[in-house]
Image 1 (tube, one colour):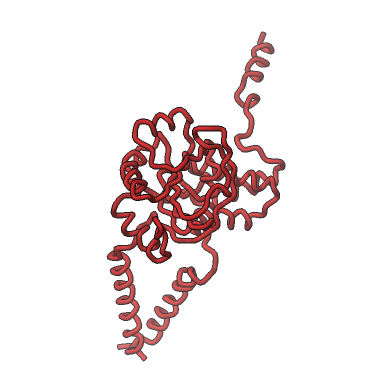
Image 2: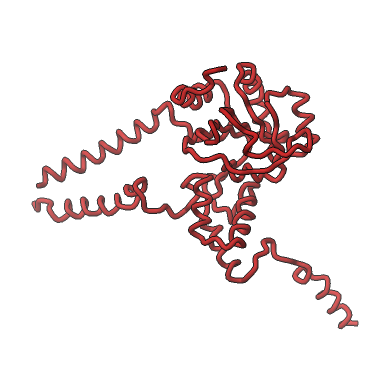
Length: 124
Length: 176
């Protein structure tokens, strides 16, 4: 009897009946997919990756990414594809180009100015 | 040297304040507006009313694409303005976004039809390619190139501040 219940429990458990939400061809692709969706901002959200968002557009983008991965596109190509459509602010990691020089280098500039100020100050 | 440094620090601070002051007070700044140009994507979708297939070749000249849906409340707010625009002979093509056919047709019957024709995009394929994040959104298309994109409700103010400048600059809708 206990055996019977054991099998019933196993057979009807959620884990046996479950299947992956996003189907990809290989484990590597799956790892790539789950890493990638954390790096892309949901265009409808103030701040949140598409991995964390249930918005219909995030769902669409996720499915599109799966399609692109299956077509054999690289991460770089997928990011370019998305930023062409939704603007460069869908990428959480801003690329180094002439619009982002200030963003990347201004902290170093400020640090240099502050250090100069610190070392060159007049000692009373 | 110290003087130079003081001047530099003061100057940078002032620069920052000026920058933010100008940024906040810029009248033309609309977060939903985007003037990046790109080519009209290829697509193949049905007309809302018939089984007619519409693709990128059916679109020519200068027109607006308005993304709407019957479940979208802001679209209803926007609708009156679109009817006005179409009465001024500005061609608008509807892109029905993730909507059931019956609901969409009923909506059009109830609120009026400003559209030349309506593309039925049930899964949002073309919308995704256009970079649509929701409804309503409006594109200005001229000869196969998207030249303006506005995310949100188009009204008198948005039309004047976002669309009119580029229409004047490019000299569009002249022969209407």
